[in-house]
Length: 468
Image 1: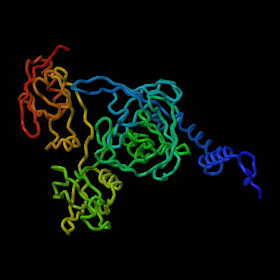
Image 2 (image 1 turned 90 degrees about the vertical axis):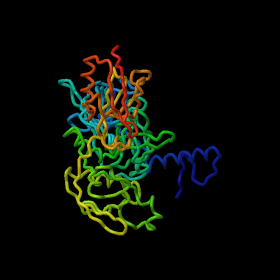
Image 3 (image 1 turned 135 degrees about the horizontal axis):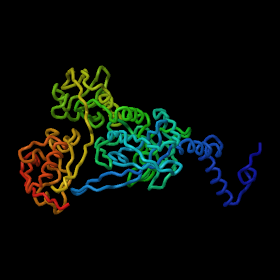
């Protein structure tokens, strides 16, 4: 049977070189674009998927307080988001809208409406907003949610959002990995650790600054992820939060404004990093890397170097790093205050413990400017106490000192922990705020701070400046 090429010649006939090149390029394009033999079909799928999502796509402009060099200033940025449900809830990233004091949301029809922050979760980099529509204003359409567990490597996806503030932009690519693990020391642009409880969808669809919070969409027009970040210094590497994680987190944020998680005080590392020690890849369990001081795990006798074998009767195992988030999530999802059975291996023996879980607590803390004292300070969370090797989370941490200001001249440094003002103990940021206001109202000439610096106690004398 005769076959004809794309330029109207019989296959097998002699072609000029330039015609051969044109034929090969044309054939290759059709083959790459049309996996099912029809370029039009793929093109139409992209357009149909775009049209399903675009009405729910929003641009998010947060106005936040930023603390730098001991001072507070207002700042604005730009990010993306999408309308999540019929009640007007919007999903975006925590690093886009977390702690926003004001939100301006631009809808797909270019109308601007105010938004309100409902809840935030730095540990998964998710924030939930709500549209504040005027009376009589029609609620826009919301997206369709897919199942991120059903994704396959190589599957087509689209990233929508406002890269570099270019609203309603679309990029196209494939799923490069569906279970990429980023280090448990990975931090958001706002400074908090994230990603302990989930792996990431890696894609080569372009994700640039401003895309954060926008939807990652399959060709059915379903949202399968939330765009979160690109890899700086690399091309075609971006990461999205799986939508199944987002569904869980958003449900709690909408219901209560926060996410409750259990805590034992354990961190883990995979067995692959200690393969030579164990001399076999088939050894079960996951290595306990560290145990927090005065944590539930430490109080019952669990030690760093133990091998966690079982938790609540379920076998635990992590040979590779991408298996760690599931173990952290198993513990976090346990009802707070539960007595749980834990089995560990130690020196050839199997030991069993009963541990009572505690609430993990906030992973981010507020910050405040103490203007007349010339510094900013933040509350101390468990995460912060661990990062700075503090014995507890009492006091406040000095975040920044105003250059050439009164605290600077008093030799107060960022990283100092304030534990008392005069004879009054400082337990947390609210406590220091209350003390500061009373001293500020009295226009005190001098203030004596008790601080801890690298486990040594110091006294810092500040002469407040009330010129503002």
